[in-house]
Image (cartoon, rainbow, N blue to C red):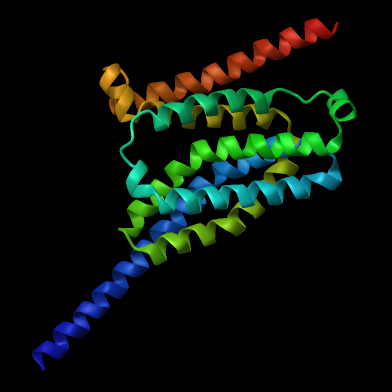
Length: 238
């Protein structure tokens, strides 16, 4: 009777832990999928109406494929130095690129198909920089459970579709929010840069104690660079 009771308690405890971990993963997906949705919406906003859905589908598919890829090699890349630094630098560049308005002549000059593939490539680079953090967070909550990691990836699919579609409409109605979206990507870039074990060893000030200041600084850099580049382009066009 005692062994049966212990087994029952053990199963009950495992079930509770599984539910707890699943809820944590759902919460992580709700928070982190917003970053990818912002990238997809920002990148697709300059496409023609009939291509926006195609861009969203490819963007979501790219994010999911990258999450699966990172999940499969998570133990190999977890402690690799300079991975986050490269991702952070790329994300700053992409954030600036996404804030800058698209020229109306671009589609006529390069063709719609080329513009679409350019958007998809931009989404892929940004997703590659951010998906590592997403997978790390989900893997930590899953405690090594492959089933829970897969659940986290699958659950993020509808969130990315719904989030990017919603933000695309918001950005078209309130263009000022595009700047906030770019600043948020800069914030994430600062977090990536200051949590890299490689740069922390080279530069003592790049520690986890300074993550808040780094995130604020990178967000301001993105906004400032975007502003001055857009002004420079306006003068050049005049």
